[in-house]
Image (cartoon, rainbow, N blue to C red):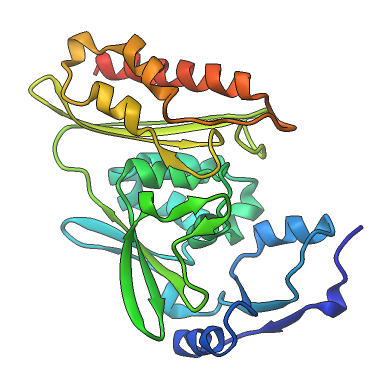
Length: 288
């Protein structure tokens, strides 16, 4: 059974100030939407409970990609297509390009937004592991002002976020990697395209004098939220590339993940495949 469209009411604010005022006046009443690609899946399944929507798609304040010396800043309405087409993203954040390429079909990539992928809060979303691997920050805006949250602290539980009812994600700030870096992205799904991830892993490593000076690993589809593999990172950080403790890292990874059985894969499958993908990543890293 599909949703009943006449029950839905949509407001289209002309500015970010107006949008924030609406959210503040009626906290929790209005559901912000942008591309609507995730929302329409729920609507078509007849499971969409919300009926009042705040259409943000025309807000210029939430658009654009800005580059400065140390970072790239993405407006929350940045689409996957814009990520794919931006030369600076290719240069500094190839994992983001790869995650955008494997998100849905071209029509979804033209409409779906980076901010929407974040606040939809699916543990199987494609861009969050890359954002985690690159140490992204979120800029949240409300009538009370602006604040920044480290992305790896944003997701608190399944569909729970550090986001107040009167707040919106305005921008995503990603620091440019410094020095010699290694980038890795792998999504495991039923098909090469238009498939929800069974396992997703993104990593960034910085190498200094043959040692693993910095490492961040982002995971998707293996816990209630997109998450960092902090135990595996700790087992590897500072180690020489010539002798990476792959077996110890695979074991440590078990302390990071808590996969479930669902229609796409079993918990056992996800555990084994996540360990295997980590091992593959580390063997590539050792040969850099």
